[in-house]
Length: 554
Image 1 (cartoon, rainbow, N blue to C red):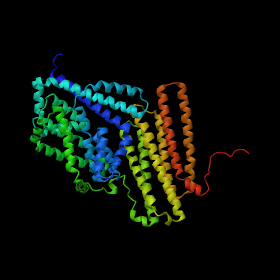
Image 2 (image 1 turned 60 degrees about the vertical axis):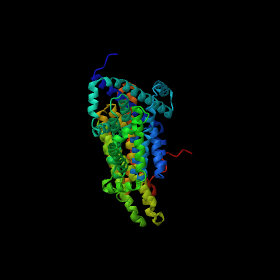
Image 3 (image 1 turned 180 degrees about the vertical axis):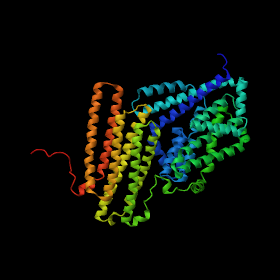
Image 4 (image 1 turned 90 degrees about the vertical axis):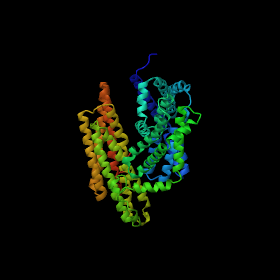
Protein backbone atom coordinates (compact mmCIF):
# COMPACT_ATOMS: atom_id res chain seq x y z
CA UNK A 1 0.00 0.00 0.00
CA UNK A 2 1.56 3.34 -1.06
CA UNK A 3 2.45 5.83 1.66
CA UNK A 4 -0.19 8.51 2.13
CA UNK A 5 0.72 12.18 2.02
CA UNK A 6 0.17 14.24 5.21
CA UNK A 7 -2.87 15.87 3.59
CA UNK A 8 -4.41 12.51 2.75
CA UNK A 9 -3.74 11.29 6.28
CA UNK A 10 -5.39 14.35 7.83
CA UNK A 11 -8.42 14.01 5.52
CA UNK A 12 -8.76 10.32 6.36
CA UNK A 13 -8.47 11.09 10.05
CA UNK A 14 -11.13 13.84 9.78
CA UNK A 15 -13.55 11.43 8.09
CA UNK A 16 -12.93 8.77 10.71
CA UNK A 17 -13.49 11.28 13.52
CA UNK A 18 -16.78 12.27 11.83
CA UNK A 19 -17.81 8.59 11.72
CA UNK A 20 -16.91 8.24 15.38
CA UNK A 21 -18.92 11.31 16.41
CA UNK A 22 -21.93 10.20 14.39
CA UNK A 23 -21.83 6.66 15.82
CA UNK A 24 -21.73 8.02 19.38
CA UNK A 25 -24.78 10.20 18.64
CA UNK A 26 -26.52 7.17 17.10
CA UNK A 27 -25.96 5.09 20.24
CA UNK A 28 -27.19 7.91 22.50
CA UNK A 29 -30.29 8.64 20.39
CA UNK A 30 -31.19 4.95 20.11
CA UNK A 31 -30.86 4.24 23.82
CA UNK A 32 -32.83 7.39 24.62
CA UNK A 33 -35.63 6.39 22.22
CA UNK A 34 -35.77 2.85 23.61
CA UNK A 35 -35.53 3.65 27.30
CA UNK A 36 -36.27 7.38 27.54
CA UNK A 37 -39.23 7.15 29.92
CA UNK A 38 -37.50 4.57 32.12
CA UNK A 39 -34.35 6.68 32.26
CA UNK A 40 -36.36 9.72 33.36
CA UNK A 41 -38.01 7.56 36.01
CA UNK A 42 -34.58 6.42 37.18
CA UNK A 43 -33.46 10.04 37.44
CA UNK A 44 -36.60 10.84 39.41
CA UNK A 45 -35.87 7.94 41.77
CA UNK A 46 -32.70 9.68 42.90
CA UNK A 47 -34.43 12.76 44.28
CA UNK A 48 -34.50 11.52 47.87
CA UNK A 49 -30.86 12.12 48.85
CA UNK A 50 -27.50 13.21 47.51
CA UNK A 51 -26.08 9.69 47.56
CA UNK A 52 -29.05 8.14 45.76
CA UNK A 53 -28.91 11.02 43.30
CA UNK A 54 -25.24 10.31 42.63
CA UNK A 55 -25.98 6.63 41.93
CA UNK A 56 -29.04 7.42 39.79
CA UNK A 57 -27.11 9.94 37.70
CA UNK A 58 -24.30 7.43 37.20
CA UNK A 59 -26.67 4.61 36.25
CA UNK A 60 -28.59 6.69 33.70
CA UNK A 61 -25.47 8.01 32.03
CA UNK A 62 -23.79 4.59 32.01
CA UNK A 63 -26.68 3.43 29.81
CA UNK A 64 -27.18 6.63 27.83
CA UNK A 65 -23.45 7.48 27.51
CA UNK A 66 -24.20 11.19 27.32
CA UNK A 67 -23.74 13.38 30.35
CA UNK A 68 -25.16 16.23 28.25
CA UNK A 69 -28.46 14.38 27.79
CA UNK A 70 -28.56 13.57 31.50
CA UNK A 71 -27.83 17.21 32.31
CA UNK A 72 -30.81 18.29 30.20
CA UNK A 73 -33.09 15.88 32.11
CA UNK A 74 -31.81 17.13 35.45
CA UNK A 75 -32.12 20.72 34.26
CA UNK A 76 -35.79 20.17 33.36
CA UNK A 77 -36.45 18.82 36.87
CA UNK A 78 -34.57 21.73 38.45
CA UNK A 79 -36.29 24.32 36.28
CA UNK A 80 -39.68 22.94 37.35
CA UNK A 81 -38.65 23.05 41.00
CA UNK A 82 -38.92 19.25 41.35
CA UNK A 83 -35.34 18.68 42.47
CA UNK A 84 -33.32 20.40 45.18
CA UNK A 85 -30.13 22.01 43.97
CA UNK A 86 -27.71 19.83 46.01
CA UNK A 87 -29.51 16.73 44.70
CA UNK A 88 -29.23 17.93 41.10
CA UNK A 89 -25.54 18.65 41.52
CA UNK A 90 -25.02 15.18 43.00
CA UNK A 91 -26.76 13.67 39.98
CA UNK A 92 -24.35 15.49 37.69
CA UNK A 93 -21.36 14.17 39.61
CA UNK A 94 -22.76 10.67 39.15
CA UNK A 95 -23.38 11.37 35.46
CA UNK A 96 -19.76 12.40 35.01
CA UNK A 97 -18.61 9.06 36.43
CA UNK A 98 -21.22 7.07 34.49
CA UNK A 99 -20.09 8.40 31.11
CA UNK A 100 -16.59 6.98 31.69
CA UNK A 101 -17.68 3.35 31.93
CA UNK A 102 -18.01 2.61 28.22
CA UNK A 103 -14.56 4.16 27.72
CA UNK A 104 -13.13 1.49 30.03
CA UNK A 105 -14.66 -1.22 27.86
CA UNK A 106 -13.42 0.06 24.49
CA UNK A 107 -9.93 0.69 25.87
CA UNK A 108 -9.37 -3.07 25.56
CA UNK A 109 -8.99 -4.87 22.24
CA UNK A 110 -12.53 -5.94 21.35
CA UNK A 111 -12.14 -5.54 17.60
CA UNK A 112 -13.55 -9.03 17.02
CA UNK A 113 -16.91 -7.75 18.24
CA UNK A 114 -17.19 -5.22 15.38
CA UNK A 115 -18.64 -7.53 12.68
CA UNK A 116 -20.90 -9.23 15.22
CA UNK A 117 -22.34 -5.89 16.41
CA UNK A 118 -22.79 -4.58 12.87
CA UNK A 119 -24.45 -7.78 11.65
CA UNK A 120 -26.74 -8.19 14.67
CA UNK A 121 -27.61 -4.51 14.63
CA UNK A 122 -28.46 -4.52 10.92
CA UNK A 123 -30.56 -7.69 11.11
CA UNK A 124 -32.30 -6.41 14.24
CA UNK A 125 -33.19 -3.10 12.58
CA UNK A 126 -34.59 -4.90 9.54
CA UNK A 127 -36.54 -7.53 11.46
CA UNK A 128 -37.65 -5.96 14.75
CA UNK A 129 -41.14 -4.50 14.86
CA UNK A 130 -41.15 -3.47 18.52
CA UNK A 131 -39.69 -0.02 19.12
CA UNK A 132 -37.53 -1.13 22.04
CA UNK A 133 -35.93 -3.98 20.08
CA UNK A 134 -35.51 -1.86 16.97
CA UNK A 135 -33.79 0.96 18.87
CA UNK A 136 -31.66 -1.56 20.77
CA UNK A 137 -30.48 -2.96 17.43
CA UNK A 138 -29.66 0.55 16.26
CA UNK A 139 -27.62 1.08 19.41
CA UNK A 140 -25.70 -2.15 18.75
CA UNK A 141 -25.08 -1.06 15.16
CA UNK A 142 -23.87 2.34 16.37
CA UNK A 143 -21.53 0.69 18.88
CA UNK A 144 -20.11 -1.46 16.08
CA UNK A 145 -19.53 1.68 13.98
CA UNK A 146 -17.86 3.33 16.96
CA UNK A 147 -15.39 0.47 17.38
CA UNK A 148 -14.81 0.35 13.60
CA UNK A 149 -14.04 4.07 13.55
CA UNK A 150 -11.51 3.57 16.34
CA UNK A 151 -9.77 0.76 14.46
CA UNK A 152 -9.64 2.87 11.30
CA UNK A 153 -8.20 5.81 13.24
CA UNK A 154 -5.54 3.62 14.79
CA UNK A 155 -4.59 2.27 11.36
CA UNK A 156 -4.48 5.78 9.92
CA UNK A 157 -2.33 7.09 12.76
CA UNK A 158 0.29 4.32 12.58
CA UNK A 159 2.30 6.07 9.82
CA UNK A 160 2.49 9.19 12.01
CA UNK A 161 5.50 7.72 13.78
CA UNK A 162 7.35 7.89 10.43
CA UNK A 163 5.99 11.27 9.29
CA UNK A 164 8.15 14.14 10.46
CA UNK A 165 5.66 16.76 9.27
CA UNK A 166 2.66 15.30 11.11
CA UNK A 167 4.70 14.71 14.23
CA UNK A 168 5.86 18.34 14.06
CA UNK A 169 2.27 19.59 13.69
CA UNK A 170 0.99 17.48 16.58
CA UNK A 171 3.98 18.40 18.73
CA UNK A 172 3.35 22.08 18.07
CA UNK A 173 -0.32 21.70 19.00
CA UNK A 174 0.47 19.76 22.16
CA UNK A 175 3.60 21.57 23.32
CA UNK A 176 1.72 23.83 25.77
CA UNK A 177 -0.53 21.87 28.20
CA UNK A 178 -3.00 24.74 28.55
CA UNK A 179 -3.35 25.13 24.76
CA UNK A 180 -3.72 21.35 24.41
CA UNK A 181 -6.41 21.33 27.11
CA UNK A 182 -8.36 24.10 25.35
CA UNK A 183 -8.12 22.33 21.98
CA UNK A 184 -9.50 19.13 23.50
CA UNK A 185 -12.24 21.14 25.23
CA UNK A 186 -13.21 22.66 21.87
CA UNK A 187 -13.39 19.17 20.32
CA UNK A 188 -15.53 17.85 23.17
CA UNK A 189 -17.81 20.90 23.03
CA UNK A 190 -18.25 20.61 19.25
CA UNK A 191 -18.98 16.88 19.51
CA UNK A 192 -21.41 17.35 22.44
CA UNK A 193 -19.75 14.24 23.87
CA UNK A 194 -16.78 13.64 26.12
CA UNK A 195 -16.96 9.97 25.09
CA UNK A 196 -16.23 10.71 21.44
CA UNK A 197 -13.49 13.19 22.32
CA UNK A 198 -11.83 10.77 24.75
CA UNK A 199 -11.87 8.05 22.09
CA UNK A 200 -10.02 10.39 19.73
CA UNK A 201 -7.44 11.06 22.45
CA UNK A 202 -7.07 7.31 23.06
CA UNK A 203 -6.46 6.74 19.36
CA UNK A 204 -3.79 9.47 19.21
CA UNK A 205 -2.12 8.13 22.36
CA UNK A 206 -2.20 4.55 21.09
CA UNK A 207 -0.46 5.59 17.86
CA UNK A 208 2.23 7.45 19.80
CA UNK A 209 1.21 10.72 18.13
CA UNK A 210 1.07 12.67 21.42
CA UNK A 211 3.29 12.69 24.47
CA UNK A 212 1.98 11.55 27.89
CA UNK A 213 1.81 15.18 29.10
CA UNK A 214 -0.35 16.14 26.11
CA UNK A 215 -2.55 13.09 26.65
CA UNK A 216 -3.24 14.10 30.27
CA UNK A 217 -4.04 17.68 29.24
CA UNK A 218 -6.39 16.49 26.50
CA UNK A 219 -8.28 14.18 28.87
CA UNK A 220 -8.78 17.15 31.19
CA UNK A 221 -9.96 19.29 28.27
CA UNK A 222 -12.45 16.67 27.12
CA UNK A 223 -14.08 16.75 30.56
CA UNK A 224 -14.21 20.54 30.49
CA UNK A 225 -15.70 20.87 27.00
CA UNK A 226 -18.63 18.54 27.59
CA UNK A 227 -19.64 20.59 30.66
CA UNK A 228 -20.06 23.71 28.53
CA UNK A 229 -22.88 22.33 26.34
CA UNK A 230 -25.53 22.09 29.12
CA UNK A 231 -24.71 25.66 30.21
CA UNK A 232 -25.26 26.96 26.69
CA UNK A 233 -28.52 25.03 26.31
CA UNK A 234 -29.85 26.16 29.70
CA UNK A 235 -29.16 29.88 29.24
CA UNK A 236 -32.65 30.63 27.95
CA UNK A 237 -34.40 28.66 30.72
CA UNK A 238 -33.70 31.05 33.57
CA UNK A 239 -31.42 31.06 36.58
CA UNK A 240 -33.09 28.09 38.27
CA UNK A 241 -32.35 25.74 35.39
CA UNK A 242 -28.87 27.22 34.93
CA UNK A 243 -27.58 26.46 38.43
CA UNK A 244 -26.96 22.72 38.00
CA UNK A 245 -25.01 22.92 34.70
CA UNK A 246 -23.07 25.97 35.94
CA UNK A 247 -22.16 24.15 39.16
CA UNK A 248 -20.99 21.20 37.10
CA UNK A 249 -18.89 23.50 34.90
CA UNK A 250 -17.28 24.99 38.02
CA UNK A 251 -16.45 21.45 39.16
CA UNK A 252 -14.73 20.79 35.81
CA UNK A 253 -12.80 24.07 35.94
CA UNK A 254 -11.50 23.32 39.42
CA UNK A 255 -10.54 19.81 38.34
CA UNK A 256 -8.69 21.06 35.26
CA UNK A 257 -6.78 23.64 37.32
CA UNK A 258 -5.75 20.98 39.84
CA UNK A 259 -4.86 18.58 37.04
CA UNK A 260 -2.57 21.08 35.33
CA UNK A 261 -0.83 21.85 38.64
CA UNK A 262 -0.31 18.14 39.29
CA UNK A 263 0.56 17.30 35.67
CA UNK A 264 4.10 15.93 36.31
CA UNK A 265 2.84 13.79 39.21
CA UNK A 266 -0.05 12.38 37.14
CA UNK A 267 2.29 11.49 34.27
CA UNK A 268 4.62 9.76 36.70
CA UNK A 269 1.77 7.77 38.28
CA UNK A 270 0.44 6.66 34.90
CA UNK A 271 3.92 5.60 33.78
CA UNK A 272 4.11 3.27 36.77
CA UNK A 273 0.91 1.43 35.80
CA UNK A 274 0.97 -1.67 33.55
CA UNK A 275 -1.27 -0.02 30.97
CA UNK A 276 -0.84 0.84 27.30
CA UNK A 277 -1.38 4.52 26.31
CA UNK A 278 -5.06 4.04 25.36
CA UNK A 279 -5.85 2.26 28.62
CA UNK A 280 -3.95 4.94 30.54
CA UNK A 281 -6.14 7.65 28.96
CA UNK A 282 -9.30 5.70 29.85
CA UNK A 283 -8.10 5.12 33.42
CA UNK A 284 -7.26 8.81 33.85
CA UNK A 285 -10.71 9.79 32.56
CA UNK A 286 -12.37 7.53 35.13
CA UNK A 287 -10.07 8.55 37.99
CA UNK A 288 -10.52 12.27 37.29
CA UNK A 289 -14.31 12.08 37.54
CA UNK A 290 -14.22 9.80 40.58
CA UNK A 291 -11.83 12.12 42.45
CA UNK A 292 -13.88 15.23 41.59
CA UNK A 293 -17.04 13.49 42.81
CA UNK A 294 -15.33 12.57 46.09
CA UNK A 295 -14.11 16.15 46.57
CA UNK A 296 -17.42 17.86 45.77
CA UNK A 297 -20.08 15.55 47.21
CA UNK A 298 -19.57 16.51 50.90
CA UNK A 299 -19.71 20.32 50.45
CA UNK A 300 -22.63 20.31 47.98
CA UNK A 301 -25.06 22.16 50.32
CA UNK A 302 -22.59 25.03 50.69
CA UNK A 303 -21.96 25.05 46.95
CA UNK A 304 -25.72 25.14 46.34
CA UNK A 305 -26.13 28.15 48.63
CA UNK A 306 -23.37 29.96 46.73
CA UNK A 307 -25.03 29.21 43.40
CA UNK A 308 -28.37 30.50 44.69
CA UNK A 309 -26.68 33.71 45.75
CA UNK A 310 -24.94 34.10 42.40
CA UNK A 311 -28.05 33.13 40.41
CA UNK A 312 -31.07 34.39 42.36
CA UNK A 313 -34.64 33.58 41.46
CA UNK A 314 -35.77 35.86 38.62
CA UNK A 315 -38.74 38.12 39.18
CA UNK A 316 -42.02 37.06 37.58
CA UNK A 317 -41.67 39.82 34.97
CA UNK A 318 -38.42 38.37 33.63
CA UNK A 319 -39.69 34.78 33.44
CA UNK A 320 -42.78 34.39 31.22
CA UNK A 321 -43.40 30.88 32.58
CA UNK A 322 -43.86 32.13 36.15
CA UNK A 323 -47.18 33.41 37.43
CA UNK A 324 -47.50 37.12 38.03
CA UNK A 325 -50.78 37.33 39.90
CA UNK A 326 -51.11 34.14 41.97
CA UNK A 327 -50.49 35.70 45.37
CA UNK A 328 -50.50 32.96 48.01
CA UNK A 329 -51.21 35.47 50.80
CA UNK A 330 -54.61 36.07 49.14
CA UNK A 331 -55.68 32.46 49.63
CA UNK A 332 -57.01 33.41 53.05
CA UNK A 333 -59.55 35.59 51.23
CA UNK A 334 -61.08 33.31 48.57
CA UNK A 335 -62.85 36.10 46.70
CA UNK A 336 -59.57 37.98 46.23
CA UNK A 337 -57.74 34.76 45.34
CA UNK A 338 -60.35 34.07 42.66
CA UNK A 339 -59.68 37.47 41.09
CA UNK A 340 -55.93 36.76 41.08
CA UNK A 341 -56.51 33.42 39.37
CA UNK A 342 -58.70 35.16 36.79
CA UNK A 343 -55.92 37.59 35.88
CA UNK A 344 -53.49 34.69 35.42
CA UNK A 345 -55.88 32.79 33.15
CA UNK A 346 -56.28 35.93 31.04
CA UNK A 347 -52.48 35.85 30.67
CA UNK A 348 -52.88 32.32 29.32
CA UNK A 349 -55.33 33.66 26.73
CA UNK A 350 -52.70 36.21 25.61
CA UNK A 351 -50.16 33.39 25.18
CA UNK A 352 -52.64 31.38 23.08
CA UNK A 353 -53.33 34.43 20.93
CA UNK A 354 -49.59 34.81 20.27
CA UNK A 355 -49.36 31.10 19.41
CA UNK A 356 -52.19 31.39 16.86
CA UNK A 357 -50.52 34.42 15.32
CA UNK A 358 -47.19 32.56 15.02
CA UNK A 359 -49.00 29.48 13.69
CA UNK A 360 -50.47 31.48 10.84
CA UNK A 361 -46.98 32.76 9.93
CA UNK A 362 -45.49 29.24 10.11
CA UNK A 363 -47.98 27.97 7.51
CA UNK A 364 -46.69 30.32 4.81
CA UNK A 365 -43.10 30.90 5.90
CA UNK A 366 -40.04 28.67 5.54
CA UNK A 367 -38.59 30.05 8.76
CA UNK A 368 -38.27 27.19 11.27
CA UNK A 369 -37.89 29.78 14.05
CA UNK A 370 -41.67 30.29 13.93
CA UNK A 371 -42.17 26.65 14.87
CA UNK A 372 -39.57 26.91 17.66
CA UNK A 373 -41.25 30.08 19.00
CA UNK A 374 -44.63 28.32 19.21
CA UNK A 375 -43.10 25.40 21.08
CA UNK A 376 -41.49 27.74 23.61
CA UNK A 377 -44.82 29.52 24.06
CA UNK A 378 -46.55 26.17 24.69
CA UNK A 379 -44.03 25.43 27.45
CA UNK A 380 -44.98 28.78 29.03
CA UNK A 381 -48.68 27.97 28.66
CA UNK A 382 -48.27 24.54 30.28
CA UNK A 383 -46.34 26.07 33.18
CA UNK A 384 -48.99 28.73 33.80
CA UNK A 385 -51.75 26.11 33.60
CA UNK A 386 -50.03 23.92 36.20
CA UNK A 387 -49.60 26.88 38.54
CA UNK A 388 -53.25 27.95 38.12
CA UNK A 389 -54.43 24.42 38.96
CA UNK A 390 -52.39 24.29 42.15
CA UNK A 391 -53.52 27.77 43.17
CA UNK A 392 -57.21 27.13 42.52
CA UNK A 393 -56.97 23.85 44.38
CA UNK A 394 -55.67 25.70 47.44
CA UNK A 395 -58.63 28.10 47.55
CA UNK A 396 -61.06 27.34 50.38
CA UNK A 397 -64.10 26.41 48.27
CA UNK A 398 -66.44 26.23 51.25
CA UNK A 399 -66.00 29.98 51.74
CA UNK A 400 -67.21 30.77 48.21
CA UNK A 401 -70.78 31.73 47.41
CA UNK A 402 -72.79 29.83 44.83
CA UNK A 403 -72.12 32.52 42.22
CA UNK A 404 -68.38 32.43 43.00
CA UNK A 405 -68.38 28.65 42.70
CA UNK A 406 -69.94 28.99 39.24
CA UNK A 407 -67.33 31.64 38.43
CA UNK A 408 -64.56 29.30 39.53
CA UNK A 409 -65.98 26.49 37.39
CA UNK A 410 -66.10 28.80 34.37
CA UNK A 411 -62.54 29.92 35.06
CA UNK A 412 -61.29 26.34 35.13
CA UNK A 413 -63.17 25.54 31.91
CA UNK A 414 -61.47 28.49 30.22
CA UNK A 415 -58.02 27.45 31.49
CA UNK A 416 -58.51 23.81 30.44
CA UNK A 417 -59.66 24.75 26.94
CA UNK A 418 -56.80 27.22 26.52
CA UNK A 419 -54.31 24.51 27.46
CA UNK A 420 -55.90 22.09 24.97
CA UNK A 421 -55.73 24.74 22.24
CA UNK A 422 -52.03 25.20 22.97
CA UNK A 423 -51.49 21.45 22.64
CA UNK A 424 -53.25 21.34 19.27
CA UNK A 425 -51.19 24.23 17.94
CA UNK A 426 -47.88 22.85 19.23
CA UNK A 427 -48.31 19.11 18.74
CA UNK A 428 -50.41 19.08 15.56
CA UNK A 429 -50.17 22.31 13.59
CA UNK A 430 -46.48 22.89 14.28
CA UNK A 431 -45.63 19.28 13.51
CA UNK A 432 -47.25 19.72 10.10
CA UNK A 433 -45.58 23.11 9.59
CA UNK A 434 -42.18 21.68 10.50
CA UNK A 435 -42.61 18.73 8.13
CA UNK A 436 -43.73 21.09 5.34
CA UNK A 437 -40.60 23.21 5.85
CA UNK A 438 -38.31 20.15 5.92
CA UNK A 439 -39.93 18.75 2.75
CA UNK A 440 -39.70 22.20 1.10
CA UNK A 441 -43.36 22.24 0.15
CA UNK A 442 -45.36 25.44 -0.25
CA UNK A 443 -49.12 25.70 0.09
CA UNK A 444 -50.99 27.35 -2.81
CA UNK A 445 -51.85 31.06 -2.34
CA UNK A 446 -55.58 30.27 -2.19
CA UNK A 447 -54.98 27.80 0.66
CA UNK A 448 -52.75 30.28 2.52
CA UNK A 449 -55.46 32.91 2.19
CA UNK A 450 -58.09 30.52 3.58
CA UNK A 451 -55.86 29.50 6.50
CA UNK A 452 -55.03 33.12 7.27
CA UNK A 453 -58.75 33.94 7.36
CA UNK A 454 -59.44 30.97 9.66
CA UNK A 455 -56.62 31.99 12.01
CA UNK A 456 -57.96 35.56 12.11
CA UNK A 457 -61.43 34.25 12.95
CA UNK A 458 -60.04 32.07 15.72
CA UNK A 459 -58.15 34.97 17.27
CA UNK A 460 -61.26 37.14 17.07
CA UNK A 461 -63.40 34.37 18.61
CA UNK A 462 -60.83 33.91 21.37
CA UNK A 463 -61.16 37.60 22.24
CA UNK A 464 -64.96 37.19 22.23
CA UNK A 465 -64.66 34.19 24.57
CA UNK A 466 -62.65 36.28 27.00
CA UNK A 467 -65.28 39.03 26.72
CA UNK A 468 -68.03 36.53 27.54
CA UNK A 469 -66.03 35.26 30.50
CA UNK A 470 -65.68 38.79 31.88
CA UNK A 471 -69.11 40.24 31.00
CA UNK A 472 -71.26 37.06 30.95
CA UNK A 473 -72.83 38.43 27.75
CA UNK A 474 -75.41 35.93 26.53
CA UNK A 475 -75.68 37.30 22.97
CA UNK A 476 -71.94 37.00 22.34
CA UNK A 477 -71.93 33.50 23.79
CA UNK A 478 -74.67 32.38 21.37
CA UNK A 479 -72.75 33.95 18.50
CA UNK A 480 -69.64 31.95 19.40
CA UNK A 481 -71.49 28.65 19.48
CA UNK A 482 -73.09 29.34 16.08
CA UNK A 483 -69.64 30.16 14.61
CA UNK A 484 -68.72 26.48 14.83
CA UNK A 485 -71.03 25.81 11.87
CA UNK A 486 -68.79 27.94 9.63
CA UNK A 487 -65.81 25.78 10.47
CA UNK A 488 -67.82 22.60 9.89
CA UNK A 489 -68.73 23.88 6.44
CA UNK A 490 -65.10 24.69 5.65
CA UNK A 491 -64.13 21.15 6.66
CA UNK A 492 -66.82 19.68 4.38
CA UNK A 493 -65.55 21.77 1.47
CA UNK A 494 -61.97 20.66 2.17
CA UNK A 495 -63.07 17.00 2.12
CA UNK A 496 -64.83 17.47 -1.24
CA UNK A 497 -61.77 19.23 -2.69
CA UNK A 498 -59.56 16.41 -1.46
CA UNK A 499 -61.79 13.82 -3.14
CA UNK A 500 -61.47 15.77 -6.40
CA UNK A 501 -57.67 15.70 -6.11
CA UNK A 502 -57.80 11.94 -5.45
CA UNK A 503 -59.68 11.47 -8.72
CA UNK A 504 -57.14 13.57 -10.65
CA UNK A 505 -54.23 11.46 -9.38
CA UNK A 506 -51.65 14.28 -9.16
CA UNK A 507 -49.43 13.05 -6.30
CA UNK A 508 -47.96 16.43 -5.27
CA UNK A 509 -51.35 18.16 -5.39
CA UNK A 510 -52.81 15.29 -3.38
CA UNK A 511 -50.16 15.68 -0.67
CA UNK A 512 -50.83 19.42 -0.38
CA UNK A 513 -54.59 18.80 -0.36
CA UNK A 514 -54.22 16.28 2.49
CA UNK A 515 -52.11 18.78 4.41
CA UNK A 516 -54.74 21.48 3.88
CA UNK A 517 -57.47 19.13 5.12
CA UNK A 518 -55.51 18.17 8.24
CA UNK A 519 -54.83 21.81 9.10
CA UNK A 520 -58.47 22.78 8.66
CA UNK A 521 -59.58 19.90 10.88
CA UNK A 522 -57.24 21.02 13.65
CA UNK A 523 -58.38 24.62 13.32
CA UNK A 524 -61.97 23.37 13.64
CA UNK A 525 -60.96 21.56 16.84
CA UNK A 526 -59.55 24.81 18.18
CA UNK A 527 -62.81 26.58 17.34
CA UNK A 528 -64.71 23.87 19.25
CA UNK A 529 -62.55 24.47 22.34
CA UNK A 530 -63.14 28.22 22.11
CA UNK A 531 -66.90 27.65 21.89
CA UNK A 532 -66.73 25.23 24.83
CA UNK A 533 -65.57 28.05 27.10
CA UNK A 534 -69.09 29.58 26.98
CA UNK A 535 -71.07 26.37 27.37
CA UNK A 536 -71.27 26.78 31.13
CA UNK A 537 -73.00 30.16 30.83
CA UNK A 538 -75.49 28.92 28.23
CA UNK A 539 -76.26 25.74 30.18
CA UNK A 540 -76.89 27.72 33.36
CA UNK A 541 -79.39 29.90 31.50
CA UNK A 542 -81.08 26.95 29.78
CA UNK A 543 -79.97 28.00 26.29
CA UNK A 544 -77.91 24.95 25.32
CA UNK A 545 -79.39 21.65 24.22
CA UNK A 546 -78.06 18.49 25.80
CA UNK A 547 -77.71 16.87 22.33
CA UNK A 548 -77.84 17.89 18.68
CA UNK A 549 -79.64 14.64 17.70
CA UNK A 550 -83.25 14.85 16.60
CA UNK A 551 -85.73 12.92 18.73
CA UNK A 552 -86.62 9.55 17.19
CA UNK A 553 -90.15 9.24 15.86
CA UNK A 554 -92.47 7.37 18.17
